[in-house]
Amino acid sequence: MHMMTAHSTEVLPTSHRDRDLPCGIARVTDEITYTEFFEKYMAKNIPCIFSEDTTKSWLSRKSWVKDQIPDFEYLRENFGQTIAPVANCNENYFGSQKKTDMLICDFLSYWEKFISNNYPADMPVLYLKDWHLKQNYPGSSYYEVPPYFASDWLNEFWTQRGDVCDDYRFVYMGPKGSWTPEHEDVFSSYSWSANIIGQKRWVFYPPTQGKSNGSLCHQRLTGVNAMVAEDRPVVEVIQEAGEVIFVPSGWRHEVWNLKDTISINHNWANACNIESWIWPSLCSALSAVEAELKDCLEDGMELWEEQCQLLLHATHGMDFTEFYSFLFAIGEPRLCFLLNHPNYSAIKSMFAQELEDFSCDIQASVGTEQHSKEIIELKLLSNKQEEEMQGMPFSENGRCLGKLHAIFDSWCINRVLQHLLTHPSVQKLQFFQKLMTSPTHLKFMQKLQMLIQHADTCGDLEKLQISS
Image (cartoon, rainbow, N blue to C red; front, side, top):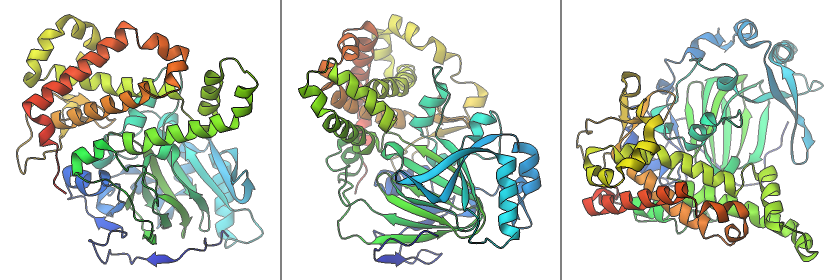
């Protein structure tokens, strides 16, 4: 069993004892609005836990559970022949847990035996992790993404790609005593984790150096940066069955299963952490790669910058080219949505022909009944009603993007693109030399900047200001 890291910890009871305590983890209900979550937790990079009411209607909470334990028969019958990664919690592999692929039916047989033998010390502690349920079973409806996490750029981008088959949506299954060692989530992204059954113990190590320091995207929203004080204590919390935990960017954490547990987990990113965490994380990873390959540069390696990008992709999971594609793929439909909004008719007329080429694929899906169930809107003007307008679908549940949210997203994309395109490495990469003179890129940047200028003139960016 993994030993506790030698840190002083603050143990929080099941019900949050002080909602104003900066290092505490607040417990909230599903009655909280999207705007409240956005302002209090996501934009400020602070964790929280949602009550079990958030997941009470999920099919997985009914069909995967029987008599307060996992329904092994149902899981075996419906998923048994699927292959998933399984970690051995007691076997270290280059600082992580060693993983092997296993049929889910074989893992379930191990799990049942482990329970029946009362979790013996002489058996391995196996933990099924990173199983891509949505990818293996497209169209399945075992759970719904809570609306608070619907602005999910990572999965919006990866699930629409044709060159790879991947996403950041996972199922974890593990017996009592299985655990995940201390880590920071991929790309310094957010994550959320919902317990279908079981109980988890989380130990958080808040960031001591805030990558969000100086983030104008965050400052535009709050007027303050999200730096975390170095003397902030470690935070511990127990997550019960049905509860959903929001894990902010940069909060390292380790997690233990105190009971036999199944959870659903997503990694995600959006305009709130793209400039303050995702982009700095990518730059830090490149700096580490460049330091590794410094000798090769001194030896005269050709295309050294390209080689650094290859290694960056291999070690970090993304390089600068893919990051640009990511920003473009997220920005394009938001531009299309805003260009079709009645408040932006003047800009639409300026780019009428370009818009026709730019948005023909999106137009077919805008305004259909299945994509107009809900509008995710910041509603920063007190209790102003949401505008009745067509929305651009951006989540698997048919939720739609409101105008203010689309403006905020576009504003942040523009800022991060400026960071990327002025990075010293970009000037030496052949891909970007061609890209920055291409008609597609130039039109995209022109529309982006014109829309932001128009929004600023109309006062829409001022509406995004949140008083601290």
